[in-house]
Image (cartoon, rainbow, N blue to C red; front, side, top):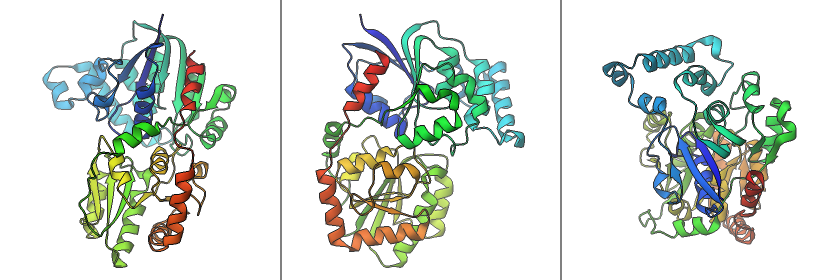
Length: 391
């Protein structure tokens, strides 16, 4: 009899955790496991790519009605949902809450609008910290509970005192890098004995297949730079735009393509307009297939302030694309400076210099590409570690 497994994640719109989960589920053994997926937002960009064997559950009613906005709540007379939304909004603006993550503040009220699931699962997996972790802990009935931590827990701003009661409820906790684990257990020592490392799962075959689609770039002499990631502060897009300004000033003929959506879109668009970079720094939004962009780029740049693992870096490595990345802590688990990429200081001028160095030093660029071609691709063995966890 197949084991019933539930995965819970905020959405399938964009982001490293979402792509990692998609990759895992593409490779999953559905003869052995009966898999369900629950998200808090409907119709994510990656949802059409999910295997047909997965049961996609309805978005919980509370999250579903909240998607429609305040006017809908007022019009339909949903007093409780409106009250909880208003209290959440007030709490997020309360300066006394600055020592907590937004997901923690929101959950104080969100949990009051959610019903517990009546279905029992063999294994329930919260595939991200924050709301999925709280939801599986409080609302899901399962014989075994697992959760993933795929960010730098301390820098992300989670209050460990608040989270402790939730992580106590999990049988096993997975972090996506050694650095992530070290940070997490320092902040959450009660979880040290049950926290392990499983890197984000990458299917090189899937990436090669998707990357083989026709090039999305028009033939031109422009240098093509690609970055993938949500438009959020930790991804360092302000540093990238400042570096882009220097690249343009140098006379370089280039275009820098960014794949991703996020809350900073308007702010970044204003910055691009201010520096007159509309023809150079191009926001493409979310793309179902980012690999055809990465493969046909001349180099990949990751300007992040921190990453849990850096999934997009691993994807660029699989496609043998030269990389420039800032020196966030987890980068050293993937990149050796000068061998399979360039690591720069975390400021715009250093980023600019790293890009210019990789563009103009052809022997260095070729050596990096040769090194990337010799690297072992993918990490399918990590899926076996997942199977060991869920049994």
